[in-house]
Image 1: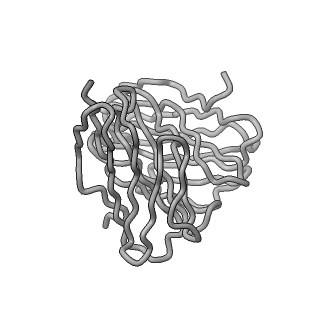
Image 2: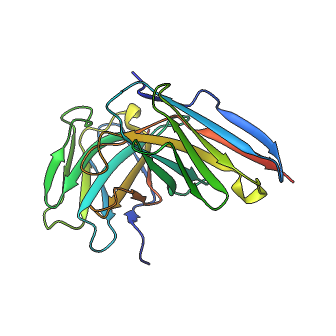
Amino acid sequence: DQQVKQNSPSLSVQEGRISILNCDYTNSMFDYFLWYKKYPAEGPTFLISISSIKDKNEDGRFTVFLNKSAKHLSLHIVPSQPGDSAVYFCAASEGRTGNQFYFGTGTSLTVIP
Amino acid sequence: GAGVSQTPSNKVTEKGKYVELRCDPISGHTALYWYRQSLGQGPEFLIYFQGTGAADDSGLPNDRFFAVRPEGSVSTLKIQRTERGDSAVYLCASSPIATGELFFGEGSRLTVL
């Protein structure tokens, strides 16, 4: 059973506009969430994280929002750039360290110049 | 370089053969993870080491899979009697225990013919 779900396999956005990537989870014990970005033939690279004590975390053009009651998080990229084109994975765990992370199936983002 | 290094980058083998995949983590990272990623899927947890010991091996699919980290640094994932279903990209990640962020290598692509 998939505990972390990304229901949109792909997303296309015009350069300069906002990209919104969504992620849902089922395990209410998850309290630490991360977003990873993956280019072809490379390993995933860490993008941004959020713990359940917050509902928003911002880092430059990237903002992650967490809605614990809905068990939903989203990644906003503003403004989107062609270099953002990649596969984005969300991941969740119980606790910040020492536990396995559960990954979603990924959303392929294409930013059109 | 200073990142997680995985070898080989590509391995083609025949069904029934034995395979070893190596991971060299970032120096000083005490936590080490193995994940497996099949086409169109997110990374799937296999095993987690804290130092030399396997703290969580609940993701290993069966007893053909085994991993070691004898000196608390380099880790080897061992697969016996490979099957075609073992074909995937095997990702290694290390983490500084304080932050919980996973730093991934580029992966070892295993193809079992």
